[in-house]
Length: 109
Length: 344
Figure: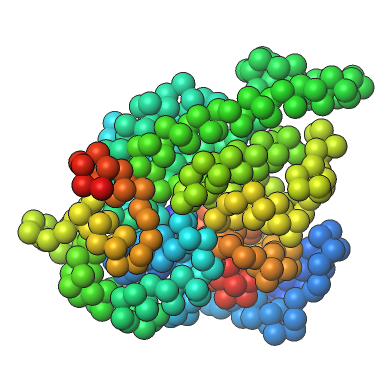
């Protein structure tokens, strides 16, 4: 059921910029259009680019926003997981709880 | 003679209907929604668009490019799980989920309280491995606080006996316990790095259940200003199991989604998930038209994202553990393109 809705209407998660726009809703409470415009502006792309996996793969790689390793190799020397979230938090200018806790517990903050 | 179209009923079974019959169902479903929720009817253009979606010949339907929305979900990982982080990675990497959710098999905050430290550890490990936002979800589930499952007298037994004051007192005690449990679990999960909390099927046990959820939301918003809070409803109207409970000076019993949204926003949630009941004997087109009529003023007035619940048996999705994809795609497309939902 989840997969059907994802294919019918979802942004595509990390294949595109779905996870980034999701953060504007979840953390900032932005409506969809506002959240898409916010992320597109921060990334320097169009809102249509946000759902284009070909464009977003390059944007995510260039800006260190995390890539899906299963399809695209493991990228061991590029940001992934919590590392990518540091970059997302900084680039989107929004707090990410796990990043803040990582900084505090690692004595970085 | 009009072509017959294979479509679905609210229980998921196949039905053969002509385009004229589908249009009549859409108009009838809308009319009932207008009457019950006291909302404005859909425009002719919106009705035409629904007819187009439900008479399209393809097996699957999807939104037009540029209309994609955010998907949130309750219970993404609430199956028995030896490795929560790995299961969430499957949703992130294989399914392309926009957001993720960790939850227990016993999807209830009262039950989760007893294993909160384990759930928090699972969240902490998952957050180290994930990139997509991941929240924790469960149900407020106020009914669990009544005997024999909980410590308070069972208001569902007291009410038929006419013991109204005792039933109300029991619910008021249960509300306090529920708020405490929800906040306890949220404290643990927030410390572990969750991006947010999902309160799923709020008001399942009526107005007391809804009030507990709103109070927990208010407390957590004050405690953690940046926490994400998704508040999803159990059904279209809040049942008055207590009858006199208020939030923000407004009576909760009998609230329809437009009023629910106001309470949810006031409490401090960041995402609202309305749920509209499904009539299993009517067509999916009928149910979707009724859903959109009721939710149109909600989406128009919202200051936060609106994610209509599209699990089994709500907002037009057939009441089946395995809802057919031909119905799911059309529900998604209609709720996004005709209603203007921010997510599902």
